[in-house]
Image 1 (cartoon, rainbow, N blue to C red):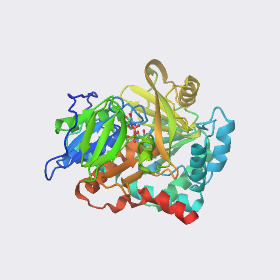
Image 2: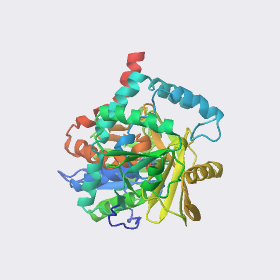
Image 3: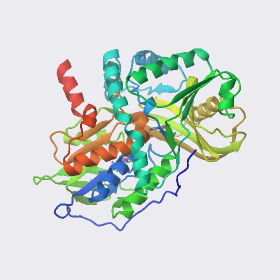
Length: 448
Ligand SMILES: Cc1cc2nc3c(=O)[nH]c(=O)nc-3n(C[C@H](O)[C@H](O)[C@H](O)COP(=O)(O)OP(=O)(O)OC[C@H]3O[C@@H](n4cnc5c(N)ncnc54)[C@H](O)[C@@H]3O)c2cc1C
């Protein structure tokens, strides 16, 4: 396990400069809305290219979906959830209280439309194309973590791979078929399989009676709050500005092609370019401009704790219950649930208790004794479960980066690097083509 120098998240607030002016010649003044992993990655790369960057967030830096998640950097798991079987899962989610995925109980028209489009994206043909695009894209992801570390961004990163643990042998067989299909899409990571007693020898923290483990050796994990903290620190060290606790309420275009970003606190930030990376609320910000982004929130929860017993040496995907177990030094984070359409941030203790109970059910003797954090966060999820990255059509100077669903940490640094090239240099990045906003309008036109 390799640990890169950790550092504490530092939140930064500078004296407000009301009515800031666009940047000097050659330097763009760019405002990024959202200080999650996506917004911060974009802002960092843009400041590295020499532009004047201001990040605005309604809350604390990195405190949204990017905070208490599992932190896996996992190209292998880059498969959209909109896939065959989604209809069956949707029906189950209405009836089960113990399942990992649940659907919002009160269906309003906007949510019903999202569900219909999601189910439409789940056909074999569409999900096959989406999986191929996502695999090809995520293959580049890990190198961008090395690039951040090389440039001095400090964060906790571990190279212990990712171990998928199975209680039932049949599920491991099924997963080996998935590995075979993922290999066909180009996945070339090292993989080993440990069956029966070899599984517990592989990591003594795992219960002796599991059926087996598939170890995806090339995957990594990071402590996500150190990644956002490290990016924030690097942005301000490079002269960028981060404004916390100010909600952006309006984006106002001017005839000159610039934008004014208006906050609830009456700050107006004049900008040459605006990047919207506000997670699922991005759709609300863009709606007044006539732009529809088919996004929903998929609520998840986690507990980070110190405990007694054997701490896992690897991050563990506990297959049957879809619970993630991430060791960060002596602390362990158990995370899970995918509650689609649940946009509130209330901690549901029943759901969190389920995650902890199901997660520890795979562990030999580790049990939490001191809870550090209980957390709720949202995955911004599009109708085809692919990210939405690129210029907003018909709105010069406006760029969107969101919809990373279950993969925001994995794809954050890569997204930031490619988006910055498009925003700052107008250099088209063909790797982003499968993720353009236009795919939704084109699809709607085809089916009309
Ligand atoms: C339980 C769980 C486990 C996960 N595990 C993993 C994992 O192992 N690996 C992985 O790759 N991904 C994982 N994810 C997914 C990942 O966490 C998300 O994809 C990612 O955090 C999304 O980042 P973001 O920057 O788009 O959104 P956020 O981190 O939510 O950031 C958006 C920011 O925008 C701000 N904002 C919103 N509206 C406004 C406004 N009007 N004005 C100003 N600011 C605004 C918010 O305050 C927020 O800070 C997990 C998610 C969950 C819930």
